[in-house]
Amino acid sequence: MKAAFIEVTRFLLILLFVYTASSKIQTFHSFQILLTKSPLIGRTFALPVAIFIPAIEIIATLLLVFPKTTLKGFYLSTALMALFTLYVSYMVLFAPKLPCLCGGVIEAMSWKQHIIFNAVFTVMSFTCCILYKSLPTKKQTGILAAQPV
Image 1 (tube, one colour):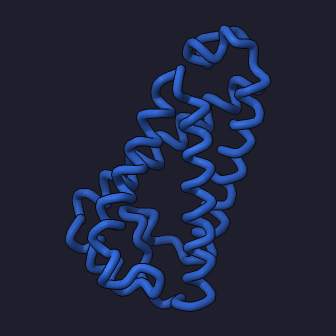
Image 2 (tube, one colour; image 1 turned 90 degrees about the vertical axis):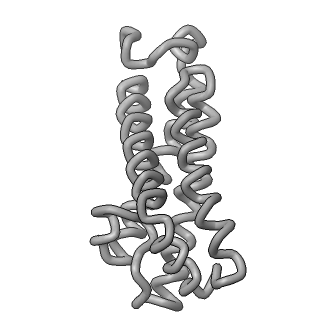
């Protein structure tokens, strides 16, 4: 069960990060403009943040893809999702009318739905950090789904 939960979560995080990163890259100019309207980011930091966020999502994806770096990928995913959850929570409190910066169909969610969505992924990723360390070593060096549970 542990290995199955880890594999499902890993797959979902990879899917999420690839989807959101590619969406941000495809609409880079719009993404950057939206960032300038954020009270936390503004014009000063919009360009660096517009570059950094998809880049770090791609790095998280790559860490999750390779079995030897999966745990680091879960750590990074947990940190990213926790930061995104904090950011969205801030937006709900101080700028609820601003559009989402996520990209794609995820933009259609309300801010409160984003908090729930992000919180669920944060908890799932954090849980994987704990569970992954409890798996036998041979399962950590190969693809978890291919190993007997």
